[in-house]
Length: 273
Length: 247
Image 1 (cartoon, each protein chain N blue to C red):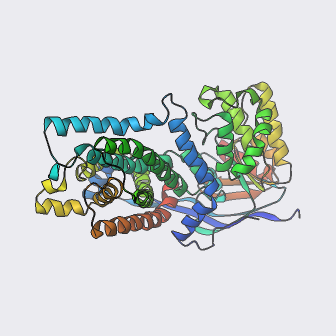
Image 2 (tube, rainbow over the protein chains, first blue to last red):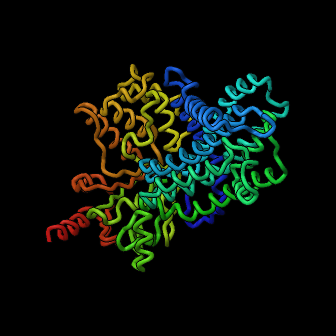
Image 3 (cartoon, rainbow over the protein chains, first blue to last red):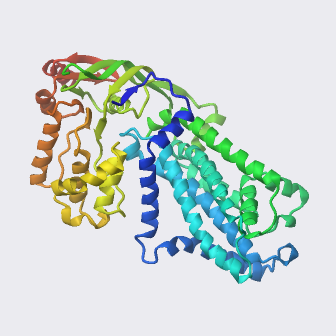
């Protein structure tokens, strides 16, 4: 028989992760729900979800390749470079905002039933990760246009997705708290996300920047995610050991930190919902 | 086993810090902080509330709006941890929540039954085996495969009610007794709620319907500004409450 004792000691992070594991049935269901809603119900199905990144890529390609005539060093093809950047930033934005929205708008359920809200954040990140995997199909096609194929070690991309799930699950918990506490936080967050996007070399090579700017950009965790993804999937560009350290380090810090802060703040926030 | 305690709430208090002007925007917070006007106050939504509910008992909470009734339900539902005091709840808890919260309009009736039931603490497997029985009781068997965005509000409410009340928990939390749908279904749902309440589970009922409280509860608690003003025999408690209201 289940017993709830409010005096029982809960170890932050550990108890939260345990609770997600115990509710993996619900987690799976939420992921399936996200994907079903996204794919099954629209006429063109899976392709609908790719329309956004593909269209964004088309616009950026036109602007930077045709209008500004920008070139990557060594005449490397621009389109695979650009599409991989757009796909990765879409993964980040989608996981982050879907997760935070699910919690901030889940008041009807979360204030009445005991469900760890972390499950909603995790499911948003996981379903966005699966969405991202589907985006690798058009990327493969684009690589083929330039007579390239995915590398033999492309499954390492799964590791990048795994890190992104940890990274965005942790961050979206913090974002959810901001959303609930401050009504006007959304617009500020959007500006911040836009700045972060420009600080990620999606459509420009990092060599374009001066040494000081480059140092700053290299500290942006998304830069490391992106370098590793480009390198491991399509053999585009290079990735360094530092990129791996930043990717793993930031993922773990965001996950543990996000969960810890959330466990302390959530009881105060839920009283407001 | 009729004396088995399902809920033991001992001296529970719930306090939270809130800003005096209830600001909820970053802009206002920044301005207030700069001007040094950011005053916080400790707010007690509940103060030293104690009660027990044994299996088979119904305990009702009455009181004015804002007295802390819903907060108390949240504390017992494990949504809010008490600031002080201790809550022990043994067994499965089922809330009768706002109907349809947790439904997704794009999913079909069957998919929503599974999702909603799982959100309420059951397993997807259990729910899978109950789909037909639930739909049958709600009279929606023929609409199971269409997205509920095409349902009328009455149909949605019926599906939610049927799913929520499909199992009898050890503790039932009710925030106002629901009656949903048309006249027929209203009677049917009221009868089912009563049957659940009488089935031997423990019930915590929050209601403004004093007649329902009088007839259904074993004990009542009158909350005023988070304090347990009086508790005990429902008739006495209701009398005390009415005396205050009419004063």
